[in-house]
Image (spheres, rainbow, N blue to C red):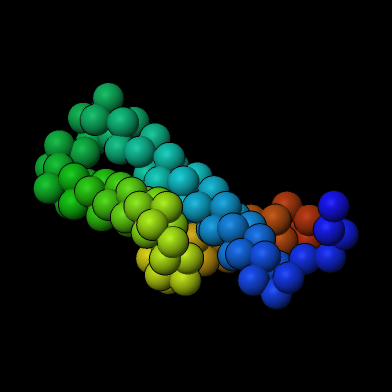
Length: 108
């Protein structure tokens, strides 16, 4: 049993963790988008912008599926680059909400 990892194993493990974190954030952002789409369809407010909604859902779904396919084929860095446009804004928005909850700012 080898207690020490080689550089390649350490790099692969770190990339896998980064992929899981970015994929989870992107999946949460996509699920949030899907929730608001379904909510808008249910109350009829999304009908006038259905084309925009469908484009947004297709792009997010395509990026998630594409990143997963790239990761499975061994293109680790490319999969992270594909996930970054969805994951980083979601991460910073989550930090903003956390700061608002903790700091309780006065908005007036």
